[in-house]
Image (cartoon, rainbow, N blue to C red):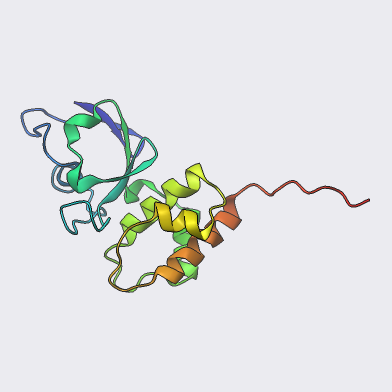
Length: 162
């Protein structure tokens, strides 16, 4: 099976990777991309969130066989070499993580949101980023998303004053 992972064409051997295997285990156990975390196994917590064709997806319940020809982005592919993604920088500035376990999933959900909606409202964030964090840093998550949006969204056109 062919798919793209973090911008790189990837071939999965059908004899080693059955189509019903969850994407999470392919990423972690087959490809060694361990930034995506196992949390609950039932798509409730979001620790395993990755992007498939730009949309946030819970990898623990996504069969890899459904992804042939598609593009998967994990936390390892969020930044560019030598430069943090604006969300990662905002996370650091806002001191979002405490234990850090759920952060990769939160970042991937937030990145998917900002890609489709560069200036989200609090309600947009609440609707799109449904990941659970036992540390409870949700106010910092929201602040970091707004900060990243402000840093990356095109400036709104202003009318000249007459």
